[in-house]
Image (cartoon, rainbow, N blue to C red):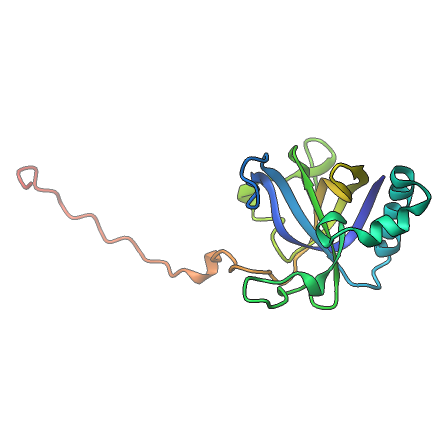
Length: 196
């Protein structure tokens, strides 16, 4: 079931190059993204309703029991308080929040919020443009579906639109041009053609 999520925080993005599967290197690499939402975000209700719809279609009348029995890695909407780093700490940006874990074997569409004058549509972003980045706000096009093997309710990341800047999550921001000093070039010295 296709949904549009608006003004959500992006993290763990790998939308320009697929990420190898760390748990099972024999599985194909995927494009990834986590979409962080406050529990009161209006899209949470849409996500829960979509999960219930696809689960009922796939698992039948006992779909709620099936969803309740699934492990956290087998549902796409997850508790941010359970997203821990290797030291057992809640990752920055996740405490008290929910997140959607989304992936795709195919490259998702990634666009800016501005119009490309050549096409009249949202400008397609490239990896070297520095956005979207972990911590920024995005609009996301997702597709929620249920499977029986492996049993779960999962999410495909169809596309992202950079929406607004936000505090970076993990890593540091690239240097700004303003952080560099400039120097006047030294005058060219007369060159002695016999000097080596």
